[in-house]
Each structure stands twice: as structure tokens, then as C-alpha cells.
Length: 102
Image 1 (cartoon, rainbow, N blue to C red):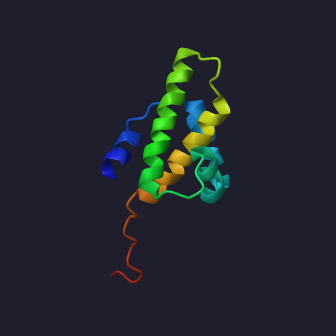
Image 2: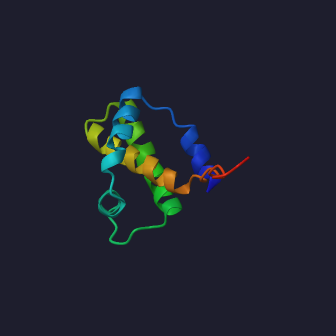
Image 3: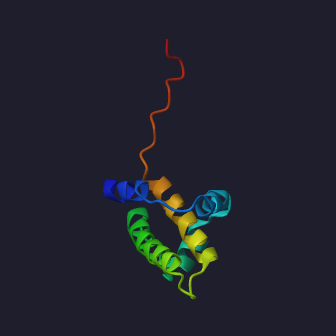
């Protein structure tokens, strides 16, 4: 699991792609969007979904860099939105501060 988060931390993408993906986070619906992006009827666990999404994203990034005619900027953003959302499900939650700490 941590290797997936480390892999995400190493991603370097154009600011416009990242900003668009961050903006799209509020509309992300795991059940609807992940099934469509992965073309699966059942939702995989977050780690499995993230692994597959990172593979899809790598292929999209290669197509972007090579100027492939079939490259879709919108699909790339959709995949990045899902990558960010799935990574958020895997990230360890910080400990909340104690309510009455003195």
C-alpha cells in the first residue's frame, strides 16, 4: 500500500492537469466513476483500484508526451481525479487532537 502512495508522490504532471483534477474532486462518485473508468461491474478495493488507475494514467501520460492523436485530455483528468480520490482512501488518517487536552 505504501509503495502506491510513494509512486503517487513521484508523479510529475502539468499544473493545469493537477488543478483540473483537484477541482473535480468534489464531483467524484466512486460507485459511478470508478466502474466506468475501470470498465468493471464490481468495485475493487481502493489499493487494487489505485494500482490499475496508475497503470491507466501512465499510459495516458505516455500518449500525452508522444502527441498521440488518440490522447484525451478529459480522460486524463478523469483518471487523475480517481487516482487522487482512491489515494485519499488509502492515506493514513492523522490523529485528531484530544478534545480536552491540558
